[in-house]
Figure 1 (cartoon, rainbow, N blue to C red):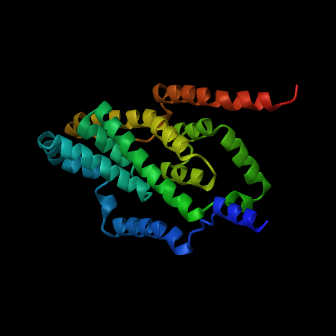
Figure 2 (cartoon, helix red, strand yellow):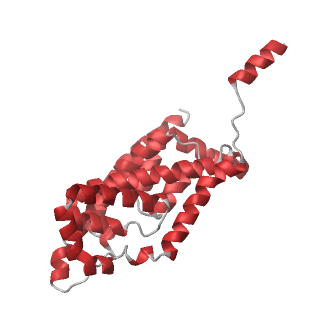
Figure 3 (cartoon, rainbow, N blue to C red):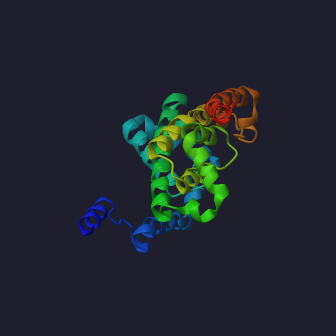
Length: 249
């Protein structure tokens, strides 16, 4: 009996981390976000800054394309990783600097890397078993989520109901697979990335005419909204199918 207990202990070692190890990465991100605001970072990540510095930015990209492109990806990943809520403005910058498709590619890579960083930090800080403390409703929701992870996560990315930085963190509260989270993030943000990159691509002509970019209502235009609704409907098919399949005949 004693040998059996020792074998079980070896098979299931205690892997609980101390509160300091769990919360330290979260504290670093909070400090980085605070420092970004304190140093006036948001003043440079907005449409007015793009308008004022467009000639310098365009010239730098022309002379240092690879450095600029890799730097853009790293900056996007860093801002998403610290959950800066205005990181989406960089999508406009990406389209302006690199064009619609190259810009969208950089946006998707940077945003996915940053989202994965904050996901792992949040999961590490929260730990396992959070839903057990939230009650039966959240446990039931987690079971439904786990049965259709890709579909649920893909829907969260496609339908812009919640801010991007919120959707980055919420899945970490549940026992979703990192692979599914990363895949749904990378694929789910492609439509929105293309939309905003295309706006940025056309920004030069607007600025040269003395106009201003207007982002309000962009995602609700029929030419943008209908394709996204179609993709959302496709993502819901597995969820609906499993619901009917689970019902007794």
